[in-house]
Image (cartoon, rainbow, N blue to C red):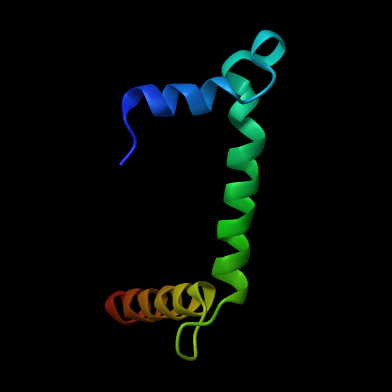
Length: 70
C-alpha cells in the first residue's frame, strides 16, 4: 500500500503543473475512459459483451412496458 508521501511524490512528478494545474491529469483519465469503452465493446465474457447485455435488457424492459400498456 502506498503512503500519503509516496502518492504525493508520484503526483508531483507528473509534468505540467505550472501551465495546466490540476488539469494535467486529464489526458490520463481520457485514455482510461477510452480503454474502458473499448473493453466494454470488444471483450467478451462468455458469449456476450457489455453492450449485448445492455441491448437485451433494454429490449426486455420495452417488451414488459408494452405488455403492461395493453
